[in-house]
Length: 439
Image (cartoon, rainbow, N blue to C red; front, side, top):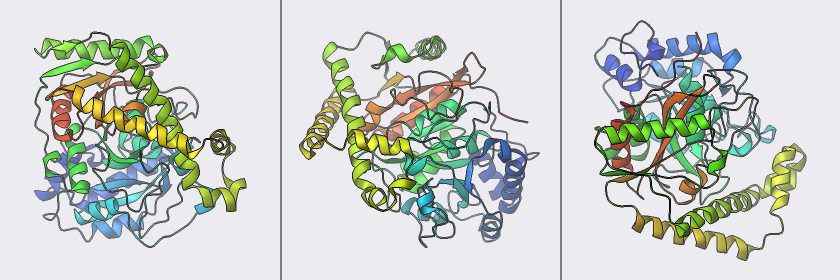
């Protein structure tokens, strides 16, 4: 994807290029905001990335920015609409909370504002970041999904409406929509970015992350919100080894997605990095399969508990699909939830011991290109890594039969986020992202 460095169309600038132009006095935050607003005005009737956008708010904020202050000074950001914003409503994709103002910022929003970032608006999310699709469209093909639940954030970044956006992942809701939309989606290790002020669905799994158009931009943004300075400027560095992971449910992957993964592995090998493509030991494959089941049950059980008030007071305003999901786990005893949590804790210990220093795992982010229609997509290739609290990143690579983006996913060691970003920065220069969407 283009990360143009000239100023003819500021909306297409990468975050870093825009930041450099702002600091050099060649671009004002106000001009960047206007360019993004123009892009939104021209495109969002089709893309529908925004749950709330009042141009007066980012315009006013842009006029108050000190271009020399903060790592995000003057950069417009999309904020997923399950995160509280003091000056905008937070509806969580639900009619229950339509127009609700909480009067406070989520911790990550406060951090990005402190870093000089500008909240452009609230990006569309599925209902409570769960399963019911939004009206958001894939910028590359409006008849196809952008993925969920962070649909608006992924689409807004892919369509050059903002250079950065916040997403959340409980199963695959950063990595998968990033792959569908052809952008970088970085899900840090669990707890890296504080989730205070987020409407939780499954608090033991919910992870804040970022969408950007390059690995460097993703690291810059994640560092600003987390305070983890080692993420801010990932310098390309090869891993010591890449392990090709044929995850469970491999039969769901399309031939084109598998070809993209093979191509990425070949490019790693051509660069002199060992690639281990041996089959997973049966014991490990079985354990990952069990983790997929446990993750899904935990997500549903914790979601049912977290939305207890909404179920009691507004059951008729929850989507039929969400009600059905909650009904499917209504009879699971608390002991069953504890057993699933125990499996995840044991899995985290085992994976931490299994992954060697400097090693990353290479796998798919999604079964293929974005499906036609407004589905959220299948998170099967992301569930296990989310459950294990591992850092993961989606990188664009190749196109599918409909000409839509494909991608690959890198998974790192627990807490190994800086090394993962360095590997991702090294690999992205060797991959072939899809072309830019729209006119």
